[in-house]
Length: 267
Image (cartoon, rainbow, N blue to C red):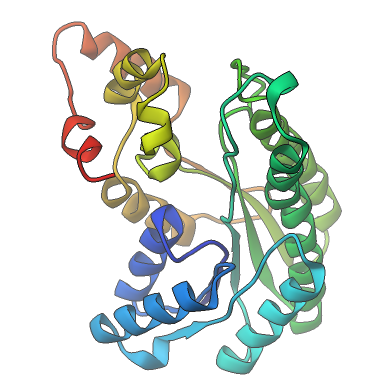
């Protein structure tokens, strides 16, 4: 299996890259920074066979860079089986009236326009090669849930689910499959940055995270195993389902869970 993962020099993207590599699959590492890509490729090449790993910088908001990412994958691996649209941007947590234009534009460009660029390029390439699967990463807001100060991010993820639904329909009868990927609440720098920890509502959020959140090391093995095992256009791999959320809140009444404290000090 040959895999392209956008935004894979850290967090969930890097975690999934490691899991694919551990299973013997080839992975193309990507992020906006050439320096970050080079560092991660070098580090992974010390853990896994260098023949399994390639790297290419890409700003998903730039269509021509996305096309260059596909071309790099073909040059390295000859074909691309999985394209995972993981790159995402959280943006600042502020009331929309106080959010700078450049911040919410950057969020939409990455989370929505970037996914559209990637999906168009990957679909065209996969139609030409005769097969392939595209995975779109969901997030808070995908199911219509709302929260103050998450307007641009939540809107981008709500629109992403709509877009993915349409693409699932458009992929029917073709050799390309469009799929959903949802990691749930994962403890990356998006959730526990210094900015987040200094916010007035941090203690309230920390309580929720201790109930619902998980580490990259916990979630990514499950995601990759289930992606590889899933079948068909429109497949959905979702870690934090509604029954699991209900179960965790019920358990929290009797058993306290603390996975935040140790991580707070490391950020």
